Length: 155
Image (cartoon, rainbow, N blue to C red; front, side):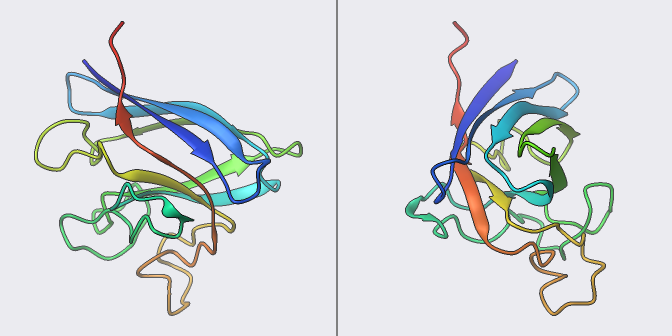
């Protein structure tokens, strides 16, 4: 079983969290964790192509998209591998995350190890918003938090 972790921080020092990734034997990767300091409501949640935070979350590149597809919802056939939909922060700004996805492996040719997970300011319209950014970013707005996905010790 392959495990990874991402420590989330944001340009606003209140945004903090950690995410644990586990790739199951059936190829599904589970993400579980908690992010605090968000504004209440929906926030786009994606894997981005680069594990580069030299310019904060802005240097993580575009959504991870090895199959060169259009942006969509996690349940869509036509979607970026990194399109994980939305997370929801409660009235205290806390998002509890529990996601299972088959397109974000921790090993192999399309591994997400070394890439970044990004939380956006606004909801992801899942490619259905009719905005010029809907089919590329889900029009999810600014990048308010991110972390690099790294292998986790099995100890």
